[in-house]
Image 1 (cartoon, one colour):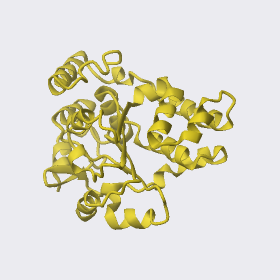
Image 2 (cartoon, rainbow, N blue to C red):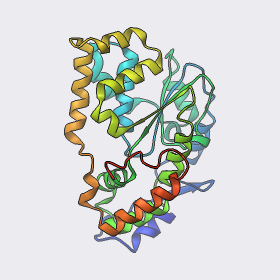
Image 3 (cartoon, helix red, strand yellow):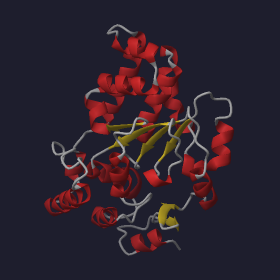
Image 4 (cartoon, rainbow, N blue to C red):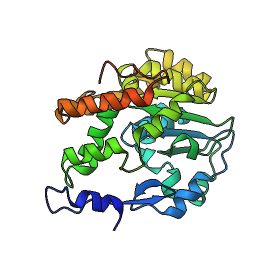
Length: 279
């Protein structure tokens, strides 16, 4: 029985099966993952043309991945299909190196998703890394609603999230190292909140980062069919997500505890006030 199963067994509100974790090299993974795939995915030889969408779980990974997929295809007729196809984009640590290479063997630009922290992500100086951050209060609340609420009480999950005893480890072990590289030429760091609030500007930044000059022109045109199609997809996400939803779960004491942890972990990084308006 995994550590995560034991942690939640004593905290369950009902008889639903608790989630489980496996650990490799100190890193917590969903029990459904293969350690072999986890290791081999980290050893994928990155290429200069590769694009990685990197985000901690429930920080907008699939949504941003779909937008990037649509931008790479550059076809207004397939925008929604590209977004829907995000689920089929190779996931490094879940699928492993062999599957990732097989699934992208015909692609001139390989697109990957990952929840891995900076030091575990395959790197190449010319590969592109689109990193998505989200405030940790909404991140934890979203993950709880989507994956945990049938298995454990919020108070129990909050303590484990704060301790990093959750799938893919400590939020700050992902966020801080990636943010420290946000000025690297091949890293584009964006927040989920910014993309929801300023989608056109965010899409332009992604297009420029990917070197999609022709696409940038189409995004600037107000009457562009492509722009309308992709902004429709953004609006769908905005209708689904409410920034600040964490307030329905967090107690004042929990909010203060997360504020303290955030302040401690981001001190001196330049990210200290990144989400001061939503936390």
